[in-house]
Length: 508
Image (tube, rainbow, N blue to C red; front, side, top):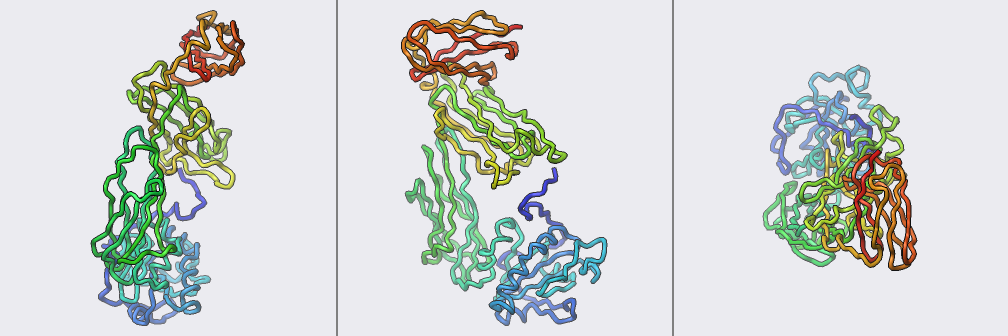
């Protein structure tokens, strides 16, 4: 499904070309020179020898992602702030590197170009295919930063969406802050929910954006704000070089908040402005009652969303989905079920003594997750678990671009969820049984209290509820079963004291 997102870079797909790209940290040994479109000489090493960091954008006029970056004005912004009319610390080169490009292509006068690449541009533009081979690019666009010491880092890569629009990253890569020791850390703390003890490990990537090699560094891991482990980096990382680090496994036995923070580099404490901090949670949710609340929040393509709740024995006890399609586009966007919270009460199998873990799975039939919403007006899509009182056991999932499906687990306290107290509701009978259109429920109560009745089908779905105030003694209530499908049902009564259950049949 082709969807237009608010963030322009989500749609970027690189156009591949056939070279072997320079690795980050490579020190250039040979110079490259060209004439720009105004016939002025462009000498890369001369710029570097003049103490300037150089940004080189290797692109093609027909390349859509290249045009997206051009229109975003990222390079123009850098040039205005740090170029000759700004702090005079950098130079910018736009190197069109398709050998068949003409000046008319650059000016946007042909059918094969994305537009006018010259209009409004102050920095250097050249048309020379040699630049693609010089940097060994593997796709268009490829954007590089070269420091005055001739070391190279690739700015358009695995961290494109984070880095290409992150001007803090640009400032540090260009060296305009002049930091001798600068450890740029990327990664995340992935929140998860589990029924069992979690052996948590943390992996991160370190990129050296300083002017000196990193020889030692530390990264702290906090559990519930208490320091649990310090990851020590004891390998040399050259300028623009990178390394992956992983913590030892930490056993997490209860719901825990996790904070990971870069601490020191080359024996110096990292300033607050340059610390990398990642946060997440490990949840060990536990259902203590006979049922729980499942909140399913859809994105704009609600018709693609479905899911199940499955026991550890593989039994599906609840299903959600079947949401209506909308008419906002040809793929069914919008409609009454889109971008809203769908709340379900999920009843556990009763009686159940073997269920200790439930797996809640959300599916997207298109395979691109549920990321399509407007945060200004819509709730965040996801699935959330609460108890009957509304206390959150597991917040909504945080990864919206999960592809085709994503699962989470919640534990079950079998003893608590099977609690029965026959001192409140006794002698419960339903009539007629089988029933067609109207069912009478007769019972005796030993107290003046409130009792909640739920009707559950054989899939474990609660299809009807009734909250009633009962008197001490005999009580009668009725259920309209006209819209029930034929089948076997459970009538569950619950109060503060516990629950009872009775089977009945609908036959029409």
